[in-house]
Length: 378
Image 1 (cartoon, helix red, strand yellow):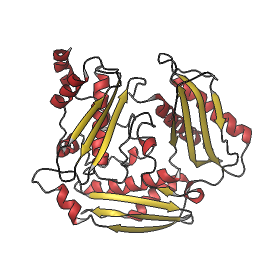
Image 2 (cartoon, rainbow, N blue to C red):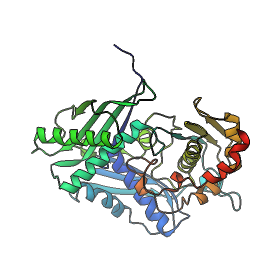
Image 3 (spheres, helix red, strand yellow):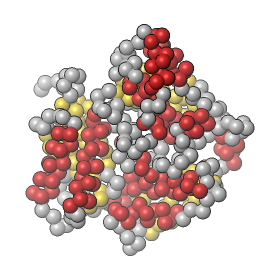
Image 4 (tube, rainbow, N blue to C red):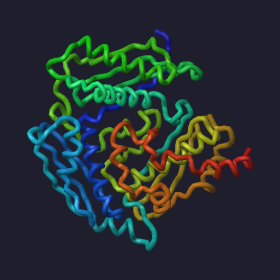
């Protein structure tokens, strides 16, 4: 068998049980931030069979109907009040954690220790890895077709998986596309296969990629029972889907349901923001940033840079440019990226990065500042 360098990434639809939980967590977060930008939120959701439990720690001045937030996610997916019992079991934030975050006047300190990663690569227009973008594209295309054509026999739960052949770095090719799509009992196998095949080819064409790849459609056969009724869901269990599809490292902390004082979220967004600037400025073809935090500290205790030997200037020079242009103070990160605004629900499906949702961490507003100083290092 000929050796190939293959990299695979997956995505899941809005109706996947874990993603349902992520969406509910971020719906609650947005509802809190809408009326109280200082809300402290760590909202976790557990969904199993016909029971959904919403828990965590929330301190806010806002009035939030947590159960209503859940139904705002569930009803567009085709569920109604007969499908689930929803229980809210939310407490306030621990005073120990609260004082560690706000112990310095005018400062926000990390509420926990932890490491985060940000990544960018120049192989797609979004400066994201190709496999994860294609996996998201497949499910976005599926959702659009179902809505546009009112296809009632396609249900909400679905997964995609894309394998890219990196053997020739100058000619990336799709090796395999896989999609598993929930359907009703009354469905036509040929219609399903034709629809999914059409989606796969459409996604490949839009990225100007090869069409002679292997297609795998609903390999398990029948897929009529989906969502939390078919499998248990938890907030934060799709962290690789949320980020770079396994192409880059991950610090392990989930995003959804967490307000921006949680550096798992704000730190990861800021790290992506920096890495994207480095690649967009053509200082490297790929860039990964690692940031380490300590509880009670307003700035990181360590920053690490890796350009995977794609750098155009020395990594030391890139590191110096980063420190001149970007401010790693947690309060600055939150303010600069406007992370106290209720923008999080739209992050909870199809990834947090590389999306056309006008997210502040995807903007290249520091590019001119980098260009002003980068010639000093060439």
